[in-house]
Image 1 (cartoon, rainbow, N blue to C red):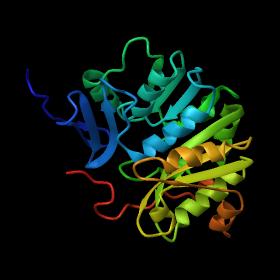
Image 2: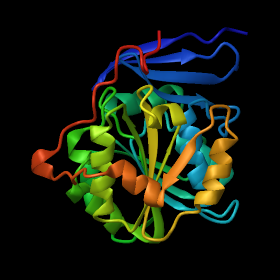
Image 3: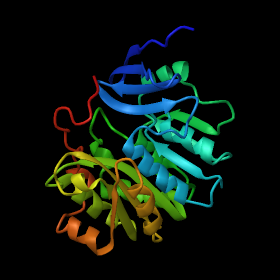
Length: 281
């Protein structure tokens, strides 16, 4: 049997590489310009290698009764890591995946296509444009994992963007986003202040070492109009290989402090990660 070989291709956002995992026969890591974007195991789509992806998966698991299908809008596609997970754990879900990088979509469709009948529709479109054109109240969950290289684009960080996300969700729906920052958390605090303008409840899931400012890392934002099941999320994230904490309520308000919401005219991308924070090989 032939060993899988790496694939490298120029895409819209830089150089994409698909690298096989030698420990898992049909698993692949996708990077763009060295920054990890997705890890997928074609034999085991519920295996999530990235810690932040497992934290988002905990939110997806708690979003409805076990196995119940969901309508989910994914902003940011990569190799369809989370859409594959949801298709396996909630069969019958209707998922729309928005990915602006057409070259990346072609690479994934050629080498790692989703299984037929998975209910995953992929569209080459800008995330903000897609969100603003989504029908009102059309999604149970919106998952945002959009990075230009290693940074969240500026136009996806504003009050106007948060308002569009709230509009597209059904009552009781959840917005979940992968963000990244480090002390003094200027970006992360401003994002929380921004989403507070459109959502009644916020929670933040991250490793304690990140929240204490000891290192740059991922933080998963959960925003909703109804209170999320914080106790359930806290139990599940605490049991992970790299345990995380769920901040909410008064503690999260203290973390936000005096941070101000960000409007379109003042929006900036998320900070550049320090060298080596997320890069691979």
